[in-house]
Amino acid sequence: MHVSAVEGLPEIRPGDDLAGLLGDRLSLTPDDVVCVASTVVSKAEDRQAELSAFPAGERAEEIARRAGELAGEQKDPRFAQAVLEESEELLLSHPFMLSVTRFGHVTVNAGIDRSNVPGGDLLLLPEDPTASARHLHQQLGVPVIVTDTSGRPFRYGQRGVAVGWAGLPAARDWRGEHDREGRELTATVQAVVDELAAAANLLTGEGAGGTPAAVVRDWSFGDHNGSDDLFRTEEDDIVRAALQEYTVR
Image 1 (cartoon, rainbow, N blue to C red):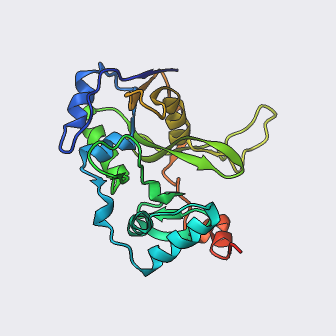
Image 2 (cartoon, rainbow, N blue to C red):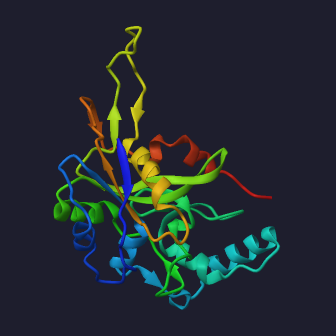
């Protein structure tokens, strides 16, 4: 497959026609997949905010105080309040805030960004990234993945992940197919939207590059069953259950 960054996008501002700006710079074929960083989707959807919009409550004050003690530096309780308000559930409050977003993604600080935000202190994730992807998919006529970067348990560093998608299943389901020795696969489900998001992130980058979108070409889902089960349910997530009992001393 081939992955290429979308060059020449301007700074995205609230209300901008993101699909139009992408379409003007692309000559798409039906099998292409467009990967778009959640940062520009959020900017177009006016998800920038000031810290002053989140006056800290009692819980946020306590989280900031405790986090500050552990880190040896002062933490702003208004940021903790913003994370609380953007979260369905907080799995950890110390030594960092690990959130379950309203759309099921588990990430640090509810995915709130504090870099490359010219119109405010904070950039919140899109309220419904799959709805955002669906809108772009309808306008562009090709599958779309809305991406974010996220850390990984047991490893240093971040990588791109999908937070919303439309026009393709989230995963290839290999169960029932066979390996080269003829053995039936019973457990393999491949999260292709995450893998495509990670490939795109190699080009879109993390800093001041100004290339928040990429196109994947000559990639095929193949003749496999598809699944949209990407975020584990609470009942099916043993790590989440363990974190709910975790305490920092």
